[in-house]
Length: 260
Image (cartoon, rainbow, N blue to C red; front, side):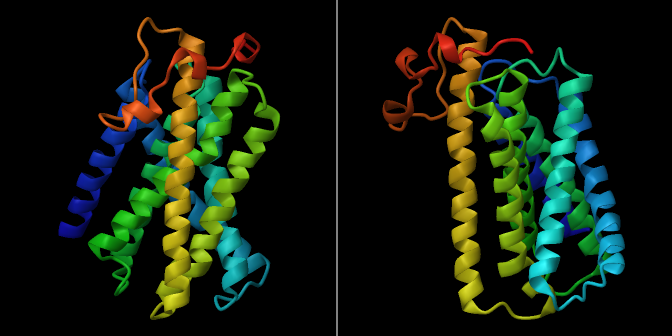
């Protein structure tokens, strides 16, 4: 119970940080919480779908590569579907290009919470430490944001959305699958060798970097779409001297989003 309470506290902290990234037009909290709730549903239903596919395709649990691809594909596509549903059902609230990343991150956060709860219920030794569960929260949040990023671009027809949409989804699937292959699945079978540990660290850093780049670009696209009177920055001093969003960094007129 203590571990799960810490998980919920970490989820609130991470969610607050991500909420801050929506610089120009904050999403309503009730919709954010609903998205996280839908993410929880995907976390549960994805496990059921994976179990059915493992049985139907006769995949054994020592086939780590196949298991990893299955988990990464099913879970990340489920998060993307949550973002697509929000974009269609709540069109008036899905009102800037960065919303795909924000809603995707909260869908991932919800999926991570329910997945952690499942592992805690199983009382799997070595799989339910605070550090392990924090990594689970962070990765699901980041991957959900990466997968959802292209939905926001597609919604507003940002230049290059036709390839950026599938690329963002593919990136989330590949990173998730690679993490499960290198670290997630071996952890369930025993001690993780040092080689896969190094790979897992590299994957974590790559995921963080990609999410950060998308956050920076998403803020620029949001500023171009909403045309705020004052530009904001994601970073404080001295980082804002490097990453400040100046008008010349924003997309030109031909990049400006149009209503589909």
